[in-house]
Length: 308
Image (cartoon, rainbow, N blue to C red):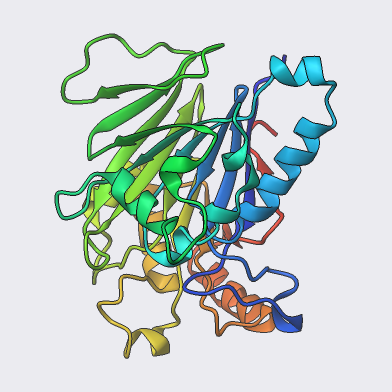
């Protein structure tokens, strides 16, 4: 089997979904990224973009013979950057979560000393939703994670293992998928988690809902050093940022500053402002390429194969 490391953008928009004729090319769904690596499915966030992923997973699952389905349950590792609504609102409509054989490993940060599971439970709770999180048929393993944690996905083993770079108890296998966790404090109120996936010689970093500084964030630069793909928040133009400072989002210039300082191979601008039309994003991309030539605009439905 050939090495597999594919990224697919399911939702690239920030704040609110914006369906309509002016967002057809880049997409209007909120944050969700699908990653397929070495037989594992990893899902970043559950904005409205997760709905189409769930529908496709269900179609594939239901097309199997019943006996085959019994031995091939839907299985995913779900990594949450934070639990603001635009990153969580699709979870109640992610259809695999209602299927009894589904196994989901869900990871996110504690907030105000509350377990991450509490935030998920609040998103599916009366009177906001008719089915409560604790009553779902699927099997869900929900864990708190923090800065320095490493989630290991070992070859042929679906269940993740949590280690910590400061207190490793076993050597990290060379052929394992390694997911590193970084805490960013540049988003209200509790910050966000930034993730790095490493598999063999390939790496990606997902850094959304972070606000840049006058100079690049040295911690993020170190975390992103020499990666193949950096997906970075770039919600605002410089003009918009003047009235949005402190909202926890970056400009395109802030994203390119990190990309250059970290020597990344490719930069994908992400978390598009809901006010930005397809034409606006085209123009922003042209200007951003002048700052960092290997810049791309994340587009819903686009797939990146890191081994090509």
